[in-house]
Length: 351
Length: 121
Image 1 (cartoon, helix red, strand yellow):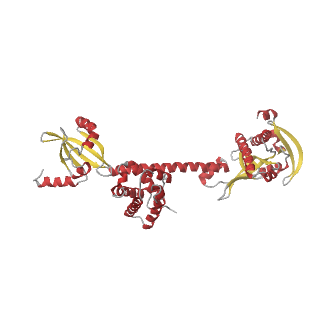
Image 2: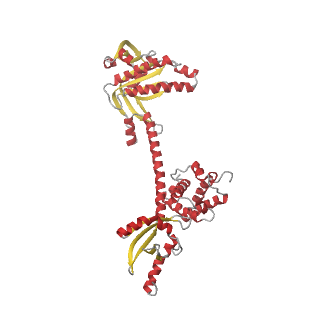
Image 3: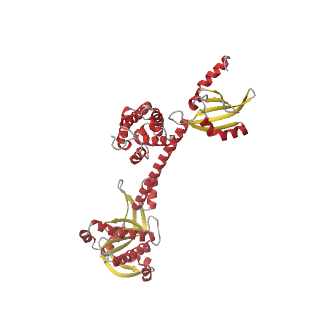
């Protein structure tokens, strides 16, 4: 391989390139030629056993492939120093002066493997963060859904604002506990909170069952509405159903609990506006004639009674016991004909 | 405030620094021997997460984890200092400002107690 200038140039070239080259005899795997890069990765092949580990790693698959197709590509790992190198090996058969030879081309793909590993690690980190963000988003969504009805939340999420909307036919329920202020003065705040949490959670479940939205609680006051943001023709009976079950729940609860609670409930009907109020501390609120009416009638109601305007009588008469209680002067609303609403007996028993 | 991680272009910066840092550590006469029998994939995974965490990027590297992976290794103060120095050098090689390098180094130093064996400070 020496003497001819062209051969010398070729040899110099083979020595200097980053590709590892070797020629091995097929019969006994003696290395006939190798360049510097090859020796760098696998050690000097003239030393006994230098290549044995690398050859062993691919011997079976390579010899089969070479016998069948005359070619083989694969990877071997070597550790000439501290760093593990990944070398891609491409073998093919050639004949030199009537003898079968294996030409080996090797490339150092360690950097590529390291980068792949790094991208893999990084992707896992990002995926993990994405999952965390997703969970956080769900938590925020859940929180916001406590503040506003889903339909309003969807509008808020899409447009960033909520357009105030007037609903002409809604029914509103207002509930308030008798003697709550005294209770808070006489008991530890955690007891008060525990009681409210327990009762309001039960109320929320009942509201949900009848398609009624709890709008807010203010201290011991509980306000729920039907007929918005989705219009429903039976909004009056929906809130009345809730009202009746709220009182039934309290009656049942009082039988087994240490603290006995009595509530007054007012029901109003008519128009109301629903909107998100506030910029930083936003809250979905409902206001309007129906809300005022419910608030006033709740104050007027006797403990464990439900009071509603007579106009609701015909909506409720089929499902409830409705009793006219006459005209009363209601603050801010003038003289109003009122009714007491009670559960239908059979229905009440079944609850 | 944006992190060093963001300032230098996110993962691109981390990957360059980590590759250099990785090579420097393996070549180091002072600390290289600790990595003689460490799997490349594991070391790469650890360093990517660690350097990303130091630079304020997305990372799952908690102090507990850091303590756990180092608990069986007998690391001296000199070795720890050498690794901090190598990381600074890797960052400098990739054009990071001295101020940012100091910031990252400070983060690294803050974890000294989790990396060194108990009793060596």
